[in-house]
Image (cartoon, rainbow, N blue to C red):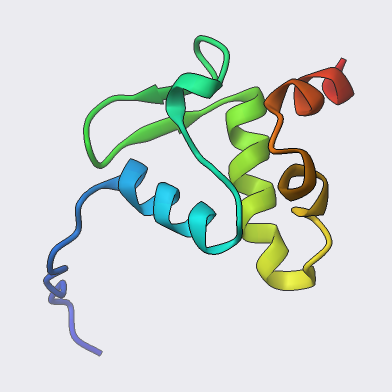
Amino acid sequence: MSDNLGVVGNYRGMVPFLIEAAKKKGMRFDVSDFPDGDVECLNEHVVIFRRTGYEFVHRLFESDKCGIAAEPVRNRCDLREIERRRT
């Protein structure tokens, strides 16, 4: 095994990546849709997800495993529903 890191070409950052990943699954990701503090962009490569932000990203990628986890979010695309379930 090599200890050298590979070069990542044309990586535009975390938020554009999540926007494209959500779009491929028929969902929409927009930082402004989340309550204050749930998605915090430190820079283009570092994003902190809390509460509804974490749950959205978790469901986005969990659906790759089972196909059912993202269904409630895909059908509603309403973050208020996620927040209501958490309370």
